[in-house]
Length: 391
Image (tube, rainbow, N blue to C red; front, side):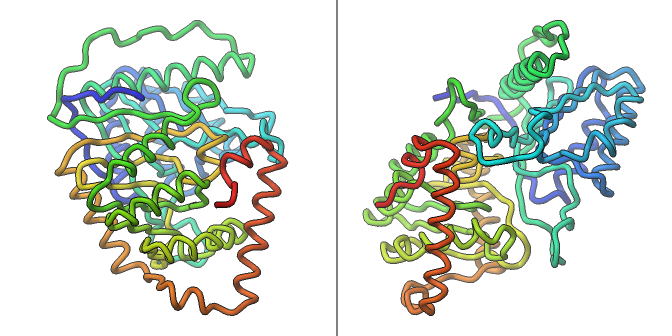
């Protein structure tokens, strides 16, 4: 497990309304270097605004490097990329040759993380893509999501991860460039008092780091667990950990997607609700807008914000990044935000009412769950057993 680093200042950013101004301000103030990684970089008002800020930075001599995913940002090379490159921004695409996704495990391995680091001084990690909060069908309130801004020693870890992935993608896409090396060699001074760590998920040395961090924290929980997750389809170990926590008296609250965005995954997730509700797990379906958050608080001192969902795609295939924060004040702020979302934007499901749903609805959910199992099985039998084995 990645060790904690002390001396950080970590601020919670709620939705794009807080995240984009903070990121844009840092880009405008950059003097040396910018790294930006995003799964989606949309050609909309927000995307054009961020692209303009990046272009201006490059034109004043800042080294600007943007890494996007070949599937999530599959239109980027025809929309915003030409203008960025004309301004001097370096752009790489993760697995561009695999933009047409299918069910092979190799093609499902995407770059799903959202990170930025400016002048090796300020880092950003979270679940927010470069896309308008309002860019979701049939939605009035903005998409609900989180990111964090970080200053202090942890920024060195964020910077190192950005450099490492940039170099790997450059070689994989045959854009042979000199190794970036340690551009910043100075020790990053403390900026606060928060202990935090950066967890990444890849397909080599860090396959289970994010999932294991969740499981370890859940196993230690003694009071309360609050998890908000957009796409929730946990495997057996994760479900049993939540049920075991509820069984020893821990209040377990899940804030999950209530609106139908991806129908198959939505109904497959709901197939698991009955067994969780029957064991005392509280479930709120967030319906005020589309939920895109991937955040949790445990016992008021362990918190995480990042890009990783609790589903097979994030936990077994994609490159993800989460920050884990060990700080009572930060955890209290995040927990308050999560519980407010559950109370004012969600609807709590009751086990008796859920159990009495019509038979055809229950069949629809289990058919969706079975189809997801089949699809994940096509991507890899071993992964299917690990993630979706029945209790």
